[in-house]
Length: 192
Image 1 (cartoon, rainbow, N blue to C red):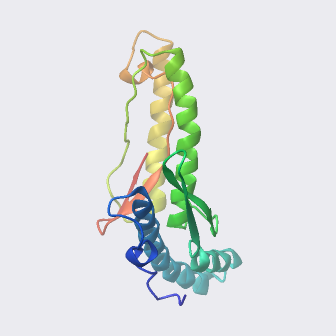
Image 2: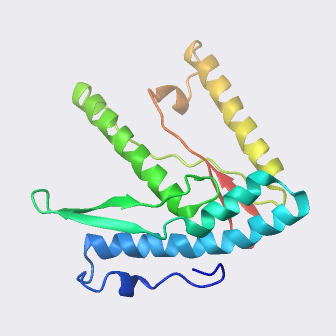
């Protein structure tokens, strides 16, 4: 497939899938991710031209072929359709299809552990907390600000646990986290 060509439409890949089925949803999701990967290729290649980095050259080559082949299989005994095999570049920091795959694997691993913890202590409640900073033009500076703020929060939580000055964060018994970076035209917006 040429670099600037759009990937095949999801409808052409999943003609036999009924509207709203899990199979069609997966195809749509990977199709949108592949479109984003094609846009990223141009930026990576431009940066490679400036820096001459062999790593960026390998990233660009991987992005060109990543998710060009997806093989879904229906498991009738489970009544589920799953991705059976695929061609991935495994550069999840640059590649949207690989990021989807990695996130899916992490969710499965954490869900198994979560079920065990919930069975041991049913009174534990789950919360989603998003920590963020204001948008800015310099991604490295915004990330460092967020990261140092989280470290400060963690230190204050540790100190508060051993003193009388309890905070809401001292009630947390465990956490799973990740960083996400977005830029929708208003500057970089990192959040955890």
